[in-house]
Structures are given as C-alpha cells and as structure tokens.
Image (cartoon, rainbow, N blue to C red; front, side, top):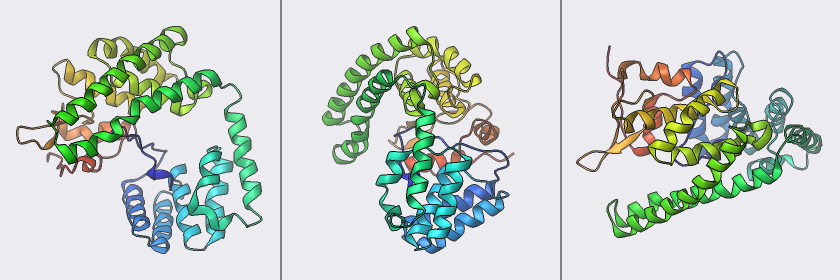
Length: 308
C-alpha cells in the first residue's frame, strides 16, 4: 500500500478541499483493517470515507482502497479507483504500481495494460522538464541522509539512548550531514529552491531534509527562501511548518505546529512547548498536517489537547 512508504520523522498529510474529520477517522480505520488483513472491511471503510467527504479523497487513499479491493478479489472496484487517480489526479508512480504485490491479481485483466499506459504517459509528461543529472545527485543525497537515521530506533532499542553505539551512530550521521549540506547549499545558491517540475517531489524533500538537519545559522538563512517556495507552489506548507518549529525552539521560543518532540528528565518522549497550544490543531490543519494526537503516536505519546 502506498501509505506504508514513510520518511522517518517527516510524515506529512496532504489535505484537499472539503475533507472532514470523519474522513480521516474512517481512512485511519480502513488502514488498520488492512494491516489486520481484513481486506473486505478495509475496502468498504474506504468507501464510507469517500462518501463522508462528498466522494472526494486523496490519491494515496484511493490507491490504498484499490489495493484492498484487489486483495478482496474485486477487480472492478480496484480499477475504478486506479483509473480515477490516473485520469483525474495524473498519478505517475509507474515503478511503484508495477512492483506492488497487492495488485498482482489485476495483472491478467484486460484493463491492466491500458492503465499502465496512462500512468506511463503521466510520468513522461511530469518529467518533461526534469533536470535528471540533478535528480540523480539529490537521490544519492537523500539515501545518505536517511540510511543511518533509519537505524536509530533499532540501535536505541538494543543499546539505549545514551549508549556508545548510539553516540557512534550519531557521529556518522553528523559527518554525512556535513557533506550533504555542502552539496545542497551549493545547489540552492546556484538555482534557488527548485520545484517538483524540475527535481520531482523527492528532490524537494531532499533539499528540505538537509536544511532541517543543519545548524540554526543555516536554517535561518534558508527559511525565507523556503517560505517563498511555499508561496510559489514549489514546496508543501507542511514541510515548512516542521522547520518553522525547529527554528523557533532553537531561538528560545515556543513552537507553532507541535512537530518537535524531546525527551524529558524521565527519558520519555514529550511534545516540546507550543505557543497557544489550545489552537495547535487548527494551525496544523491550515498547513496540511494531521491532528497532533495522531502525529505523536509514532513516539507512543498519549497527547491530550488542552481544554478551552
């Protein structure tokens, strides 16, 4: 399923017009049912989510619904959602869909190859202005940024947060970050903040991650650039919110969107201080972020929004 492809510590939900709280509750339930391999109920719950939102839905959610329908041996409903995102949302992730084992049951259907042709055409259209050498470089930087960070949870669980092994891992991460920062600032100073039409969404994510993992001086330098990139549609506002929070905390202020967490004296993960915390979910929604209660569950934090 598409929703299982996550970037560590940088999970952003994209909203579309008219979505309701009920929609997200139902989508979350549908995903949980999928993980339990209850594909029939998962598919039907996705349908209820779309119905609750005037039959609108995110492309990733429709893709996931298609997976559940396919695994429940209902190709008609699966193709309905796949063709919808291919024709209405210009879905273009060709490599993912041809390798997705959830959709294997569709491969012999006469509708499969025409669907792939549509997606391939979307991909070619999307990539017509791509700077492919630069994308290749950014892909390498992305892998370097994420490779050792993906080990953090496992090393901490095995050896502890304050262990020598964790210190060694962080030294490697900081060394990689220094090299990546030189490359990314060189790109930004030469080209400015490039949009997905030039470097794809993953390329933009790479630029963001490297700046997000840099020191305060660098973050303060490029924060205005990123704000302008959001206004120009070259970067999503949810990513910018993460950097806004990190910079605010480093400047001794409170964060705005609640994206940053820290460990307290007991060694437990907690949400860092938030400005006007009572309204944090309204601010998160305005930039396309999920409710804070859901976001912090990844760190096993049972967060309760303050009462008015």
